[in-house]
Length: 190
Image (cartoon, rainbow, N blue to C red; front, side, top):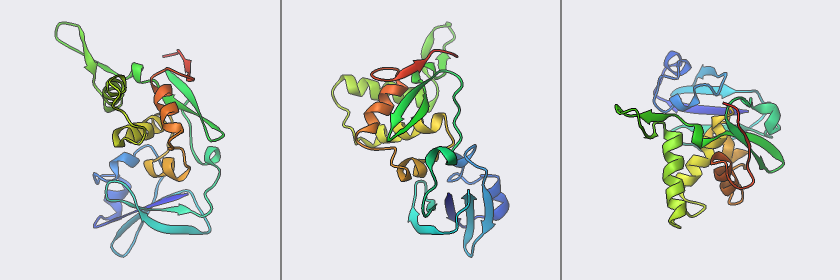
């Protein structure tokens, strides 16, 4: 359903997702890796026809199956652990609750704050929201919405946008779900 292209890398390094641009694809496969004239193509899923190659994030180029298959038949969901469900465009997806992100503990045994990017970003954005400085299209908020959707699925950033899961309507719903507020339906299990 999606292909990624990267120049200047060999098939073996690409298959190991060793290049910094490819590390974000770990756990989002399986990836079939083939050599191209200038580098490699990593493909997940199959299609008879493919759309145009477009610029993606981190210097990758990507190409989508045309037409894209149904979302829920194309991705794997992880519905275990502390999560909330968010309803987006006719589909219900789980997101990791930011409150359960790992927290660093100091030498004195006291919590020092989130120690992973997900929890730290949620905290920073929450503080900005409280001060009234968080527009819906803020790049950090958009990136966090992608992180939340990818936290409990094998979606990639480009697939989040290709399936139109990131919109002005869904970003607040995703943020609320990740923070366990609003219409989010939290599952309290750890």
